[in-house]
Image (cartoon, rainbow, N blue to C red):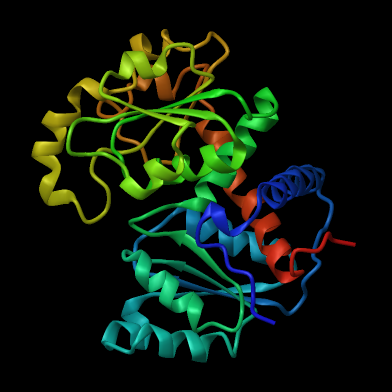
Length: 306
């Protein structure tokens, strides 16, 4: 039987995504109570990183240890991938030695190629196309604080990047209305916009996007690999900073999320990210719990834990 992979939110049904997030909250409670949930002794997670990381590496590595297993960190500097070995060859070899693989790559096609040649589940820890694990944490955070997200209004303000693409996926899978406010030339993936038709509105005005929103989210203006574009991006995105005036357009109980790392004074003002509506620290912690629930789901083949 072919393994289940998690390269996008579309790889799980809406019901399965809700199951994972419900389990994530259970694991979070158990962790805070100090209760063991080491269900997978001797299971091994292989982690391939082309891009640097703090939250992704620590959350996956700590999460696998808390599940009773172990994790191996692999970068291009210390694997044959860095010397030109085809990724499909690495997939065949690595999946014969570990039980689960997480990949954090630049090119999404490489993640798809790896999964196509892997005999164990593969998780997308971020590509230039999307970041589905972060959306699990974001949706978990909203549900825990404000209840079901279905039918709510979410504002994405800034770059139509991999995070924006994942919010488009989430709008389809969790059935919320998404307003995307981006400058001309920075739109999210066209195919995803079409797939989310009926749930998404593309705007240029961040004030309109934030009006009566239940959740306001953003990300850095220059992602990894775009450092050379930073001067132009700083000019183009200057009107898209999420500040107190933007948050004042949202509902009084609206929350602010950011996947981090954040640049205070650029995409978000310090008064917002460090203010009472910001839930970025809860969001960051939820990476751990959501990914543990995801790994459990994949290791159990989609079955509920005992």
